[in-house]
Length: 239
Image (cartoon, rainbow, N blue to C red):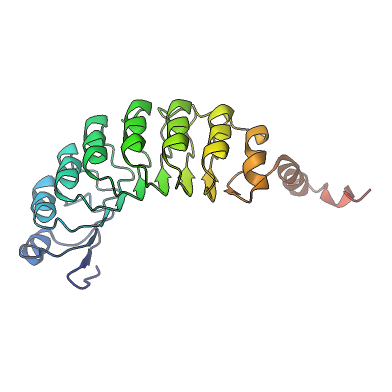
């Protein structure tokens, strides 16, 4: 458990609920709130008052807080218009309607983690990025409902995008990756591991620009496999 100055509050999963309520009861100047993996005790009733009385919040971390509900995201969107960073990884209570509320009211968002928010589909993601043009970092990893429509809209609506995580988005294909390369000149890192329909023909343009990819080029992958079975010593690439 870490206790920091009044502008920043970070607690761990074993923090007592009573202490949380007592210590934050009078706090009104929070700018950062980190409550990662507090699913064992954190509820809407604990968090909603804190959000309501701290409209200056700019960074909120709720990854793994599985016992909350969509009402928390709606409250964040209505109370914290200056929000810049929000992490909701593994919060499966996030749905399309609550994400629309976030998009309508938090136009300053620069970083959003929606890893494993499996209720979300292309339509909700498209609506989000049409409103939040300042996004620099976005994770949609581990969501089989996300496909090319969402990725293409991200590319066209978010020119400031630097980091995009599509790990395990099985419906994403080459066409949308080419659109990313065309419309996102500031892209620095892209994760597409386990996107089986994304291959080197679409990644090569990004690779040539120096974009960090989590998938190795085909030749390098082949060499690693050969090395694993003991054949690499017999290959001379200089001939």
